[in-house]
Image (cartoon, rainbow, N blue to C red; front, side):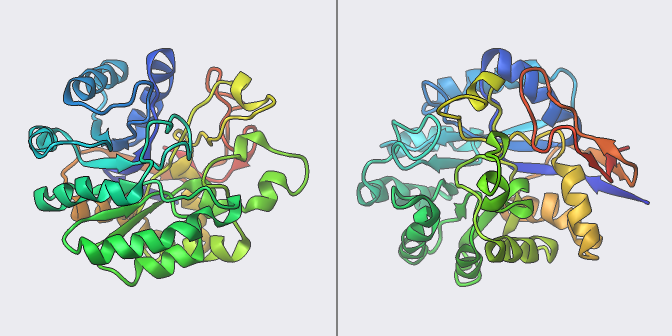
Length: 329
């Protein structure tokens, strides 16, 4: 058995910089035709010069692979002129609440104040991508942010708002209520729950933010994905950290799945008898909703056992060493 995917896309990807970029970017470029690149570097990608330099570094790292980095800007108090100049170079602007995740210390301190910039994005037709968590109890952080999404969906009805890496059944229900709300979901949140992370021995390589939730949340996410919800797309949130930052006191948040995401999800779609919907979830929905045309690339998945490597350089992937039933052909 095999599956042929046309121009698969990763709509939420961390590539880092320097040596880490050189190590991980080729792994995404091999099997994806494009990805939405996160801007939370140090310093953040929050101006056009910085964005162009970063994009050039990505292209340099991937060689001749047919791969498009769809760039984003880190949300700050932009002028309308700045956004107009950047519009042709970006797929959206990413909002991080201050201090909520990796390298977000310079993020938004006041969501109300951010609405001035958000209104400019709506006028200019630039999508808003959001890391939607508060500083509440860790299991409730996404749920607490849903009221913000609802308010913005109503206040900015012409704005495409993307709820990044959703993790709860409540987020799926909200997605169904507003046509201008969109979402991405990760490999790990489709496959694991908090019990996998911390129910036995703590697995640092499954620890990420937002944290994995309950079985009923995973079930809702899987149902939306395998049925190719028209405003839901795959976004790996693949976040590489060196081994020394994961297997340590103060473990960094992030799960590395870039080289294995397509294989892992093939098993999920097959188990639910929904392989026909896989193309929409990993490409067609995103192309339609963002009005993008990625480079042409065909990726073949074959029903052949594959053992996930124990490491890619200094980065340990999700389920390292485990045999899975699907391989890249």
